[in-house]
Image (cartoon, rainbow, N blue to C red; front, side):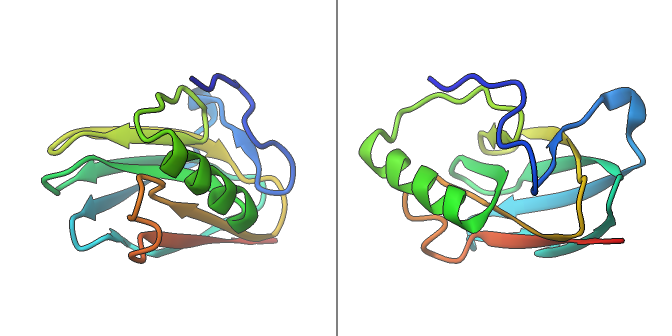
Length: 133
């Protein structure tokens, strides 16, 4: 089990304070192995509430990170597929479930998110957040 309240701080941002949410972005995940939308633009300094809905018939997750971190974590998930998560940069949703992440984007750049359930990222379940000045 992972547990880290400030998972992956730095260039990609950090867990946000729900009282400081700038806006909410809704997205869906389904068994086509896609996020909708798959590209989001935010401003540096914004705190975003991502509100995700799993419209599929299998579990999906949204994990925020750099592509290097996501690939490393996906490999760990392949080795331990039943691993439970409690990190602030992710949400795992059963079919029909809704849930969210509050994230503060601190610096301009590109941040990725993906579903790290084995096979999902490899099937194309990845998306990007562009952080502007």
